[in-house]
Image (cartoon, rainbow, N blue to C red; front, side):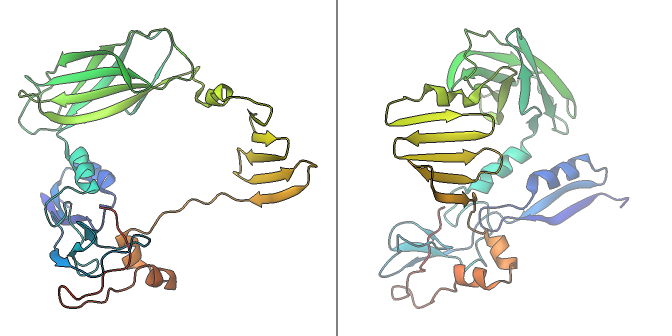
Length: 308
């Protein structure tokens, strides 16, 4: 392509997942000819309906319920492709899009530090076309285990389409290797409103986040221990072992006989609406049945629950 191009639909906000918006937006940002694009689309298309006998609390639904009897009918997944709900309340992907579209980007996500580190550098990228960062500020807070131990404000100066490196002093109090250190960053405009924010992990080389095991109470009944390869919880009656490499779980009785052997870990989530729509298996058909549509006030409640 050798002409300026705007993509009419580069991402689809079906359900609560807006495709690979961050990766795709970075491609647009670095391209000489791509000048922008549109997401389909801003809001869900839903009709407010009342349903009897109401939602079943033990099942899931593809609809958004305001209460036990009232929901937004989006005709299955056909109208559930907005960044905000039908009543204009932001969805999860609204906030993700706001983060990706922020005109000031904080580049670091993790910074390696040591006990001798006295300052860290963060990089800000000004993506405004014509506006500098003069008058805007970076507010920072050094946090240990979620509690602020130091903070400050730095004036910004980067011109449009330029990067700026900001030096932030870090005064380390007495450290515990099990501590979690974060640098909370917030870029604000002249009125103090947030433009972009991020939590940057400060990772120390001598951190010991697994050391919490040693703080657990040890009694004659239960003992917790770990090695580089195993985590073990034992008592006089049984022993439970988890392999750190494979995740396999083993349970043995007091005589050492296997009660449970070789359970593999399994993590899962519900399919997103986009995944369910594109899948062809019977499993998906069973998981997302078509609702029994009827006149308002008499239609059967969709039998599955969806968290807004």
